[in-house]
Length: 275
Image 1 (tube, rainbow, N blue to C red):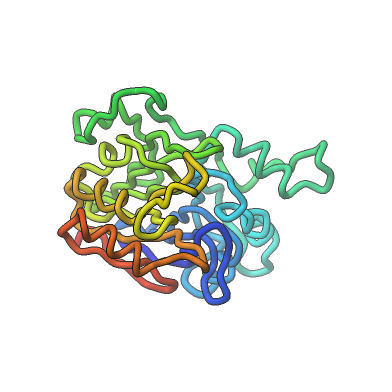
Image 2: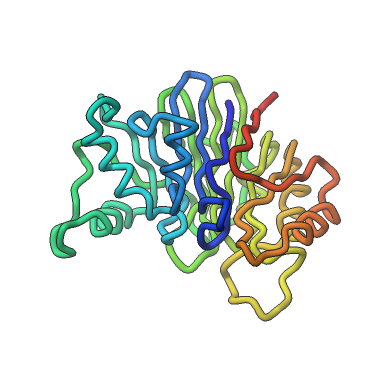
């Protein structure tokens, strides 16, 4: 499985970096887009096929979803590269109404995307459930399985002001990627990331939380490093750092707790997952 980073700027797009968007190419050839914030569709036009992507949302804050209505326009109306089949869309339970209103002609009549997407809601343990390390045995019970082609997807609750999910993606080759989306510290992150090849983890607060940041929102580099170490992941990639953020501080914080490979996500980087 390969991941192309289309955008990784936190909270909003930067001058040379789109907001959150990560394109996966699974071993069966399916394209899966994780989030689609402002600027991501333009990068997808360079690196992928907008008419042929499945859509997976961690949550629906604007920096993770605002290019979706334009993606729907492409899939419906592009004269030569429109979608030729219905793709899968997985997201929060609020996705049909939230996205439908974003694309609507009038707020009272949300757009209906059922012509181009089969819409499915995440299934995940309750937020107050005891975190259980991910394993083949737990996948069918604690972490119900969803599928896109031969790729398996699982979710756990994130800690964020809106309905939000951590997600684990495993393709038929056995490659595994965990994406934190946006979350504050939670034991569910290390649990669902157990043994993953790559943990793509937000580090919005830089090296450490200075105590004055809004609570229950985001992670620091230190917290990302702790989760990666507890999970025993193969590689940690730090993302969702805003244009005014401290990427080098985030690296320092993560490396203080995780002794495996740590790097910063950057636009256009192609990451081999599981090899």
